[in-house]
Length: 286
Image 1 (cartoon, rainbow, N blue to C red):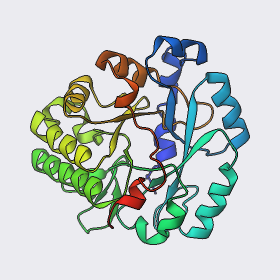
Image 2: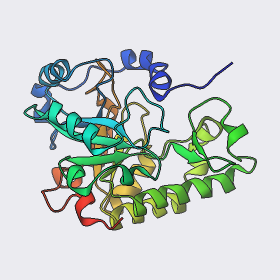
Image 3: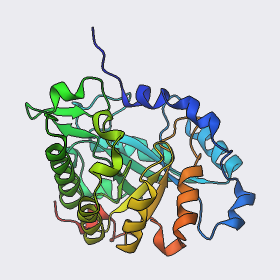
């Protein structure tokens, strides 16, 4: 029997948690924050752009739409895999009051698209949640039985490899945002502080700053934790907010905003799409 879960199913399992959170901030709450409210991690799954734009206006939060992108080996409801597919996706967002992005997968997505077409996007977002398995193939770390496919016998050693994976993705791919930052698979998640040591955090921070990659403050996972975020701010990292939301759960940024207030973030500390010519896909060598 196939016991694997899609990322959407995995997130849906946590949907009840959203109902326990305070309502998301609306436009009239923005005066209490010294920064704009932007959810850079919104998926259109089972919805339409017009419904999502209406929700964005209702909640007073600008949305950045991201669709999964990479080779067809990646399994999602939609995976953009060539310039034609990416151009149709971009055309569907033209004229809408949203940012246009993609959520890339694995380490081979760059070969799917021309640099010129990628440059029509506002940003590229990715995460580290797909990891090389024992056989070298991609493994979704949120799926059941991950320890059977990824060698985690020595969890501290595996964590070192996981940090190396962060470094490789940030340094070798033309991305603007690292989403779901500091997320850990289930076998390690309960001991977050034991695995995200200051030294490991600093490696990620230094690489993100060097390559001008923002770290997402995720309201869906309520990560990174405050100590990680304080160290990141001290190191000069920029941040983005993300719900990883599917309709109608996008724009629920309570954790992101609470952490931003705790850190005393200002607009200069937050990600904003780079101007033409300065986007990661234009300035990075790959």
